[in-house]
Length: 204
Image (cartoon, rainbow, N blue to C red; front, side, top):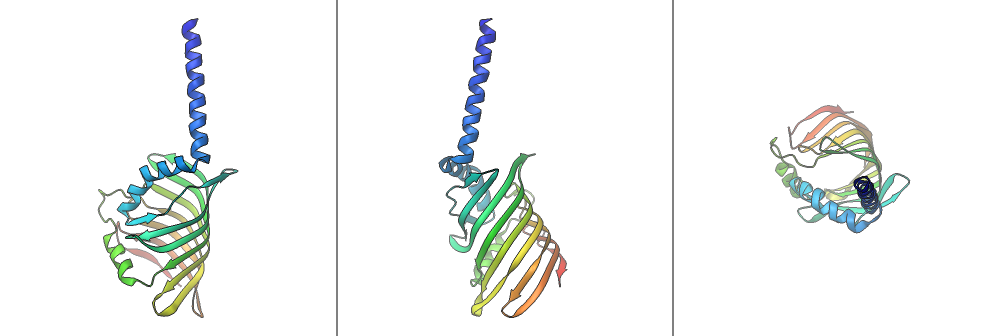
């Protein structure tokens, strides 16, 4: 009888601790940053990327990041605003996100030498696993890229899946882009950076 009671108390305490830990992950930015620095930061470093991540807000099954800077070799090259992440799961060692959208992405691509170096240094061997992350249903409502000679690209993009497991891979990337006064529709069947360094599909 005592053994059964102790087992019940132990299971109850374990359930309480589990619920508390889950709640802290959802709502404590300090805990989120600890987890991010433990798992995401080292993986991002293999891709040559760092961020100023300081936590997420959680409400009604969705995480929101108001603003996030992305850096290449410690230089800020992109700013994301209004990032919404829904349905995050851990499956077979990979973080799977069912939906991610971004209100605005601004990319400063004026330093072409920096981007060339980053593309050259992306992991290209299968022993470097990169970031164990797969994202489905990606959308960018507004994309702006600042190019050399004061040129700008603006538009919106959709992608069926993006994974960072070995380099960067993207499938079914489409959208509408505008370079100054020239508008074009883009469709890329598959895009690989790092693992195979190839692009299949095309732009039209």
